[in-house]
Length: 364
Image (cartoon, rainbow, N blue to C red; front, side):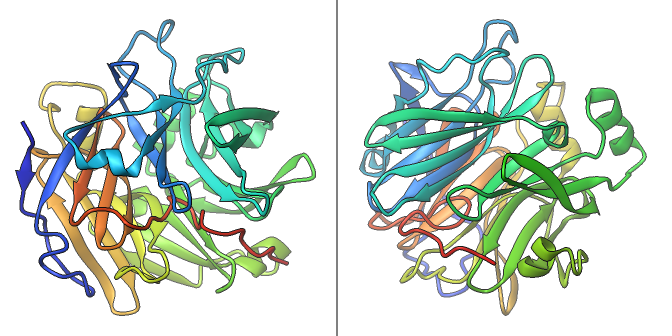
């Protein structure tokens, strides 16, 4: 049965009819649920969504995650069948994908970055090329600075940014930072095969979104309940590593996205936020009282922060990523095998970390 619920608040030029209904769509691959769709990237030209999924409650020794592609048009139904793109990719330590990014190349292929948090506690970034429905592994990036990598974002065809949500490696160090509310997370850069820190002192940096043309970098500081804005060129040049603005949001922000040209959300930054980090923890670890967790999606613009979707978890729990196109909203969750869809039928798309409709200009 299709679940339907009125959306939260409709703002910033979104019409009441455009987001009048919200529902969930079950995602399967080979007939099996795709659990834990934490991040997604929506490709305009190919009309499909790339999904990063990993079942965090499955047996660690048996579970493996993957990247999946699902047609946008299939999301009109109650259930959509996805294709697993990484079925043959079996690296040492397993494949447990986290944050992803997608970049359109001039030759029509897509470059893909994926954070892989392996079973042994180490973290790598995997590079792929997506040609049609065929995913080719291009290589693995390893560095001690990537030990707590959370999200990634292309700067150009080779360089990319990453967030490290804690300063220390390992669960004990991360738990200590959380317990003492230490802000030791970092934003870093990978170039020429090496990694370096650009700025630190952030409370759980999560999603990041570079806007190269505007010389801005947006970073979701989850434990600070804020989105930080940096001058991108200053970060890359090492001239000034302090944020130029701090935007408070109603919850801990997770992944970030941006509306495409021509969309009612054009120029806005979308953030999936967690209204209660304690409720998220109970839900994430399937603890008593954690059957559901609230979900909220907000839009950041020149006039401030506005809520697009607000739910107590009965329809959709713990949204971790949201994207918008042509008046429609799509969201994924770290624990769910469903996507949230709000509004009219799709006709255009955006992606979770910048643009997939064209190649981004190269920053200085």
